Image (cartoon, rainbow, N blue to C red; front, side, top):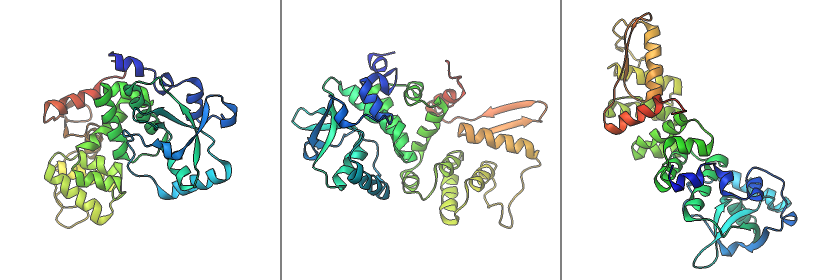
Length: 302
């Protein structure tokens, strides 16, 4: 493991001092009880440029702002000095925004002067993924940035955020969607479940077809998965419409298992044979696609 990976290898706790980690994990460390906490003017603090969140729920911010008005900021922000003066948020941007909305002039902070740029980035990204309600696309982009900026593998990221590698891999797959579809996920037009159904469709033109059906007809994820399977078998018409072509006599149990494989691997999968004996064919379309499938196949301890 590289130096960057070593520094980040134990997750968020390894990057923070004990009192910092207590704060981030919901501890009841009050500002007046910690010698490491200072009050700093909001005007001296700026957002973290590596903040993966681009959507902050206004209703949730107002609720937090109301709480801050009555109770104050219970959990201090974690900040680091900037070379040009002032401080940069390492963890706690949501509290920062809510405090500004509440009209506060100062907020309690813990100042960390001993963090490398890599560790600042790691804390910001990990804290967001672990604690904030990111959209599915924001979460995927955060994973990608962790991998690119910190030289991490999917397994490294999974260990840092406490999730399975397959979960991280499936999240990253959402970034293979066209921008229009990513925006639809971000804005709640379709869900991440719908997006995974679209990604399971092999033909890009059929992906667009399914996206339009989901958007225009309000299909459930289950219906989207069903139609994804039909599109992969060459059935273009929605199953509820007249003229839909039945599958070519394949055992319905085989078809059901086949679709589960398609959903899991995000590519065309065919079962040839019977429930008693046969073979599984998994299609891939590029070296990167093959690597992605291998990541899904590999056991967690490899």
